[in-house]
Image 1 (cartoon, helix red, strand yellow):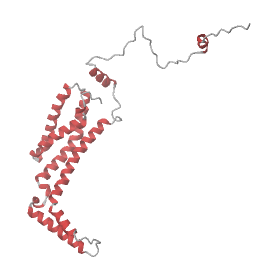
Image 2 (image 1 turned 135 degrees about the horizontal axis):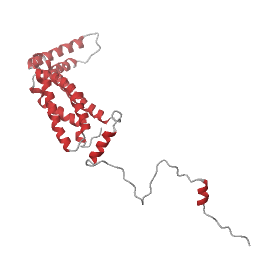
Image 3 (image 1 turned 135 degrees about the vertical axis):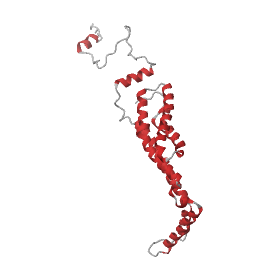
Image 4 (image 1 turned 90 degrees about the horizontal axis):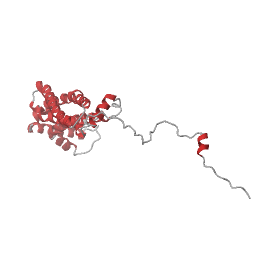
Length: 234
């Protein structure tokens, strides 16, 4: 998996751009049409990114893997969560009376009653007198807490999809089985479409042959050994 077009076309970055485009429009769709519309938006955004990718000189084989990761592996998971998130937003997260002030007062009163019962119960070892007011305050802001929890869950789902896409791309153990055709295609793209050939050594340059022993044999050592002329004794 060779990306020659730059880091902006990494799996995680492209998936992030596609999900952001879907998030911008998902609230406008009815539940029955949401799945098809979101897939159309993702395909359109991916086509725009592909045009930029091809202008940058990217390889078709890399784009095929990228498109499969976005449209097949990640998008169906996002669509399921997006449809449920839209339903929750339109129903005010299934809150009683849609979280209006009257319902907040009921939640606060329920927290006050529960806190008082816990404080007066002899079999519960809690002596904190502020427990009832604390639970009343929690009951009053319960609609905001529920919205925050579901919104955080949706954001974490999208972040998890992007993180998994990045991890899949960077895991060399999964992409260590490149064929010679893919390597030749990448080298051809790097060289502007020309097939790269190894340089031919000239006659004046020594040819280096690998895996040959450089040990000198015994006769050659004797032949190359310098001769020392010993002077005779007078």
